[in-house]
Amino acid sequence: MTAPIPAPRTGPLAWLAPYLERGPLGALLLGMSSGFPYAMIGATLTTRLAQDGIDKKSVTAFSLAFLVYNIKFLWAPVVDRLRLPLLRRIGQRRSWLFLSAVLVMGAVAFLGAVDPTAHLGTVAVAAVLVGVAGATFDIVIDAYRIETLRPDQLGVGSGMSQYGWRIGSVSAGALALLLAGGAGGWMLAYLACTAFALPAVVAGLWLGEPARHRDPIPQRALSAMVDAVVAPLREFFRRRGAFLVLAFVLLHKIGDTLGQLTLRLLLDDLGFSNEEIATYDVGFGFVAYLVGIFIGGILYARLGMKRSVLLALCLMAISNLSFAGLALIGHSNAGLAAAICFENVASGIGGVVVVAYLSALCNLSFTATQFALLSAAASIVGRLLTGTTAGAMIQGMGYVNFYVLTFVIALPGVALFGWMIRRGLIDSAIAEADVRAAADQSA
Image (cartoon, rainbow, N blue to C red; front, side, top):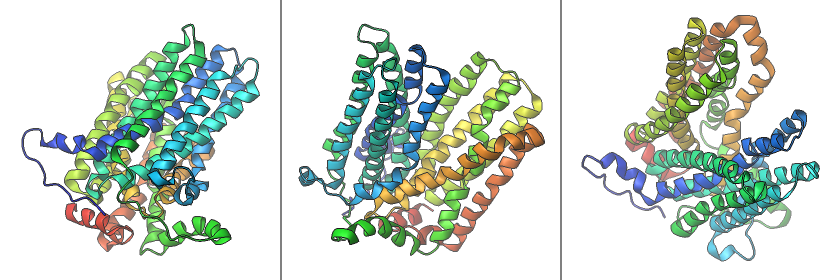
């Protein structure tokens, strides 16, 4: 049963009220825990291996541990279906939330305990274990967040989750670096960082089992195994407009991904120093992204799901033209600051409202599986094209034409979403009646 939507508050600080409700604050805690395992096998592990004198080829090979996050949809049906024997009394979502938190803490502690100079292969195994545990944690956290938030909270909740993710990943990485230089070394650093799994546990204890969660119809033996994989797909593709929605999910981030993942090549060729990149791309960009997240939550609440997503798609497409402008004018700190800030604000807005839209597409009987599939599909095409063709396109046509092309590539996704709004396909592809109602009320 869905909780009633409270009457809107009035007053000068009314805009802040949605961020202080239980659901969005819980999403903030969940995001903090979701972000920290990613940091433990990312920059933190790279720094540790480099300081221990491991060769660069071996260090970069550890990035393969991130592939686990891209295939997490393979075991998401287990999280949706399998009831944990000793924990089932506390609910399907909370039992998996608490178990995956313990698994993440154990895997991170194990990674910190292994000496790379003596057992590099064991470190690789430990990194993969952190990836598997962290990806499982992500599956559960995404499902728990979606089912905990009311339909009208999806935008603000997605924004708070992304705030939390940034806080968790950055804070865990910083804490590890600070503690690694002390007497306890990297072992103590990693052990201390396991505490970042606890905010999600606190959220689970505070919010309880999601009232909106709905168990799938139970099956037995082999039919249950097959149904766990097939049922979420079958349910999704039976909806009116489902294939067009999937086409949009695959298309909408191609231009944005191509632009973002090639930016450092542009900055290097324009002669920007490491200090300038750190100041503008990292520093200004980080603040601008947080601002974009905040704006995205407000736009979702004020404009509704459909119009806020359409606006975000337009802004993300236009932001690639700012890189074309930077490539045209050359080395300019003012130009770099403007381009970075505009792109990150647009990405922050898009990150909130598009994630909220993907969340809205999930059937509450298959939340974990469907969101894992949709989130993977949203990035796979852009990453594939970037890795296989982007460098050759830049060499062949130059940066200005390349970024203009990324703008053009983004337009079909914008046009398709606008067309789906006009045809009513956005609403018909949403499984849950209360989510559809919330979208209609705000549109």
